[in-house]
Length: 84
Image (spheres, rainbow, N blue to C red):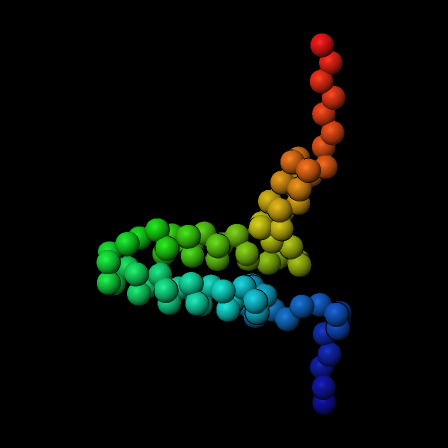
């Protein structure tokens, strides 16, 4: 017996992340732990944690998508007309 997902075109997810994000988080996590243990350098660990939180997907959207859409709207799609 096979169980198919509702949407066959949806991207593969694992827990709360897409598989692409899991790969990025795991590689960055390894590099961050290496940097932390060898040089006591904390910023890579913090950046990896921030990326992991921003890419959590709930109902097929993430905070990173919302930030990307907001930046696109406010920075590139807006038209400002300045009158003197």
